[in-house]
Picture 1 (cartoon, rainbow over the protein chains, first blue to last red):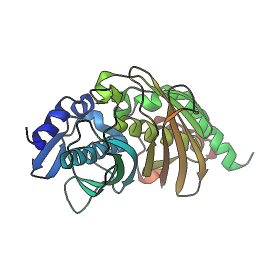
Picture 2: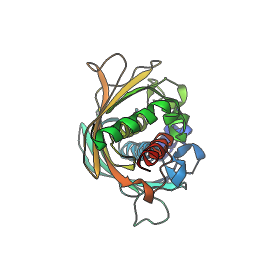
Picture 3: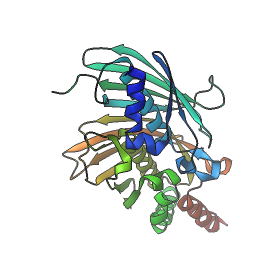
Picture 4: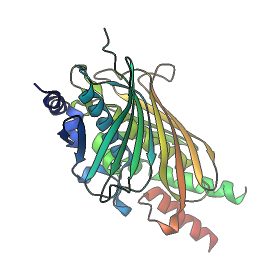
Length: 137
Length: 172
């Protein structure tokens, strides 16, 4: 099976990815993730804004998926730490994200991800994450 | 008592009266099953029960990091709200999470957040997630929240709105 197929298979059997309803559009080694809007994602109903923790979880899964795509790991890479920058209020609409793996070392991967809605040039949040990519023995 | 202290007290009392609704009125917190267990001035405590749906690694049953992110983000926000001396609406500016060890399959996760400094524009917070106590932590968080004038932005936070009503009653 292709690595893209393995990633899709992994997301399909990951309960939390299913709970989010996240999709992955993979083009070779590039990928865009899509989070179709659901009412449960709302954090502030008065201003119809997504919960920061929802955007954050989606970005973390996106970063993780991108690392998975570029490696031959059998298990999801383990997050070491993440920093999320909230740039704009995310509306109650679909969310998209892409991640770039800046450095893929033997043990650590450094990843940057960005989420946006209507305009790609106006990201709603950014994420910087480190993942452990060594298979634990 | 100074005005600031009085405002802080009123705001906190309003939050206490609404404590059961603080998390349940937030759809994403409700969907993930967050439960606010108690609040103090500048502190908030919560719990999330293990559930199959929240698992991030199907082979180990470990809860996904994103669930902790949401929990600590939300709880830091609540802690910041308990530390304000006037009602403000707030938005997470940034949040850093360090993952120390995986959460264990089948166990509740407890969390505690502390707001340790508030300026006119920003509230600074720390939080911890663990099973038993803070000695054996699953994840820690550091979050900064931008504080906004509540009149410019509907808050959606019933406790804050109630405190605002109480404060305006007092000043009239």
